[in-house]
Image 1 (cartoon, helix red, strand yellow):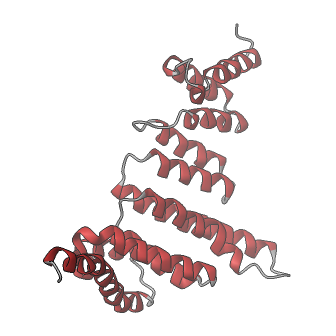
Image 2 (cartoon, helix red, strand yellow):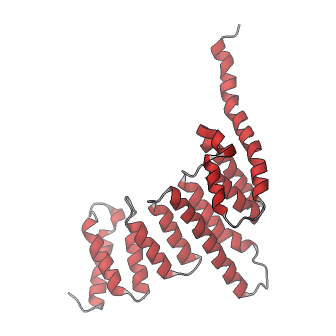
Image 3 (cartoon, one colour):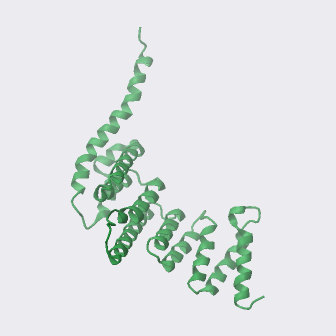
Length: 243
């Protein structure tokens, strides 16, 4: 004897799986179509509100998770073209998780440029690949900022890429400054910005930044680094002969 409740359980389990498979099937022609280079990659983002993506509704997270798995498959094969395409499909399916934006940008900035790094490759070509990767990753994160305009973490990631991948201290300092202004920004954003300004020979600006933030740093919170900031203020004041 079978009850209707018991009989419905397998269906409830299989339904999301079936819908996810249908979503993957629906995305295949989209992905193949996107394999053709486009000047305006922003068109991909609009998939989130129309076509196959729009039909998914509440399954956005599941569809994006499936897309992300395929990103990792392409990444493991060091297939740069498919990695790029599948990253865009992932954020088109669901642009809400910062995880996709942050880790996707790291792939673009650090991994993809290294895949073409062959023995004997001229240093100029390596520099260009790193610069191109940094620019592509920054553009991807700026795309993410359109969905998360007050995300300090996305801005900090841009700063990291400017610093580590592009060797651009000034650009990194500017993005850290923007990040520090956002609600709930980590305390360290302003501290690192001040340190970069000091390294750039702009110690007076660094001192001004630290003096501005120190009143808002709670002494009881280790993450605030209030003692560290006070030490740096003293060091900079000594450098300028101020008491």
